[in-house]
Length: 388
Image (cartoon, rainbow, N blue to C red; front, side):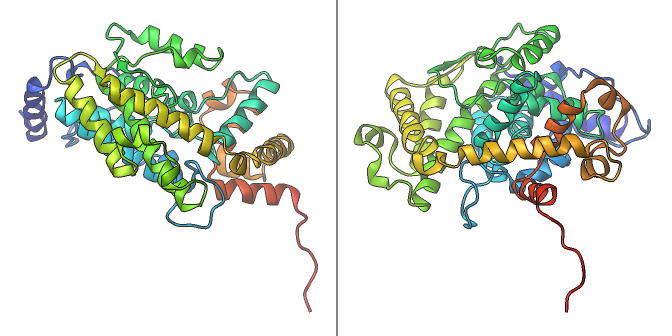
């Protein structure tokens, strides 16, 4: 037996000690066939660990660095960006997974990839792009669906990265806007069912909120997404003077505290205690009630604040403008969508997608800065002539 095979074998043996409800590497399913580049290739990475690396080195992951989490267009380096958020999710989820004796590689892969489909300017931008999609008969635009699309249909020049089914499923089902006291996996989910859910989620409003992950690890990431943002968003809101710490109701702070650190500790500890050695995740009634009230507070005073949402119509105009301009640009071989995005793209991608769908993919992948730069290039007059 080769050395790399021995190392992998030893790793798989350690997985035998995981919780009975954990997803083992031997259960990993890939929708595409793995291509062996070299039969003598030394590779000690199990399947889910390999997925982590593929996601980390993807172009979409690189663009996390300049994508809005909640607050856009703030000249403050302390404001959370999407890149930080996914790291917070990964750390929190792996902490929970380690305590519950679950597969940390699978948890990390889902965590790092769950927001790859997020558009510039966060959920505000997502709503704008969703409006465009519906107006042009392109179905719905949902960032969790787009995250799966990025990994399976866009990355690697349209060939996809051949990510495992369990990771793609966890990403599709991560919906961090939905809260329940109990998170129970759909352990009987098949590949066929996942593909149906993936297709329906992009067409039927609200359907993505009804689907459950096929693994307990996927459930861990789903709730960790909430735990990672709910307290951090409060810290950011205080930083930009949107709220004060005293604004948080005492009925919430008496249970969870009023700082990000205490909120995370309270939620993680309660979840671990109430989920240990169980095939599902569950909060205590007291902590879940406080969490739900905190999310309601955030929606009212942060996410739906008039101070923040007064920019929504402007973003709608910006996104519509870029979309319309790119419709004209896409036929030009010298346009940026042609040279930066479509050049070298797999023919299966270009042949199976309409030009409008391709434009939506291009916009969705933009960073905040690149989007603004594109708008300026597409609409502002270019300089000409000489200077004196």
